[in-house]
Image (cartoon, rainbow, N blue to C red):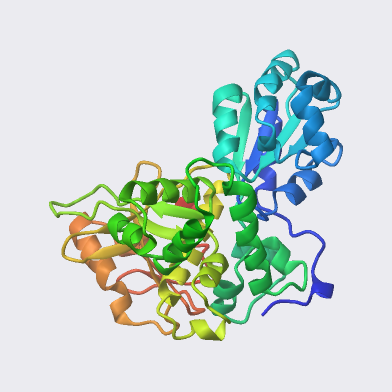
Length: 402
């Protein structure tokens, strides 16, 4: 699948590095948020090696910061610092506000955190306007390619996922994800009042994995987990804030058609979804019913990573009418007409790949040169109905994501 641990580079360069440097030249603080193990700490320590590194999950450090936040911050007023897992001491945010207001030097403090629901709450309440924010998801296929790390087939990516540790050590994906899920449940969720039963929440995670690439049916999801409709919505919101899933909203243009109103659910890492769904190996995915949804997750999150690494929010939607016509991805492009992208896991191009694109273009007036089908093959030819794009070669689409 990938190179051995001995062949791995010590650090895979991240595309977000440039944006983080830019924000650090303008804001007194920069926050890098993202799921656990997405590479936040490695990234900020490589970009800011001159700043003291402070891990607030360390018990002694956390106790000092909680008991005497003024004295704790006074140590770093002149030097600045990287505060890792800063949401562990929420009291720091309000005290840090005063430090940032006294010392307006750009890039003084770099804040990282995995519990994004607590992290963003602290920033919005105390540090709004003082912090530049970058969302960091796991590795992109672009970053792997730039590091000369290749996979033979996309099923390997769907099974292993793209968390950096899997490409820097010899750990098996099943071992990594078992530990990952337990850490998320025990450390990130157990203190939240919204989640009182961790066992039920783990079942909820699995039921979400089985629905990868599907329109969310809150009632069905709630019934499968034995929870209420409102709890299902609340827990999905937690997963979305944690950046473990992304909910792609339906596009608003209806062309006089009745549209589906519910979002579609995707995991931001296909390997996590595959593990939760009980998939045992990359070979299991060849004929697995989840393969299409996981492949869509891989491509859509590649688009999202391109946006997030540049400090932008999502501009992705999907479109489906009540007759069942659907476009997997609609890109809102800088006020211009939206750009349709269909996503097909098949490796052999078929004329059917463009059926929905042709239908959309007839309704919207869009042209084939702004229409794309990403598929599981390698070639990227222009067809009469649109551009066929191999999953490794997404460059023709990237200009619409800027």
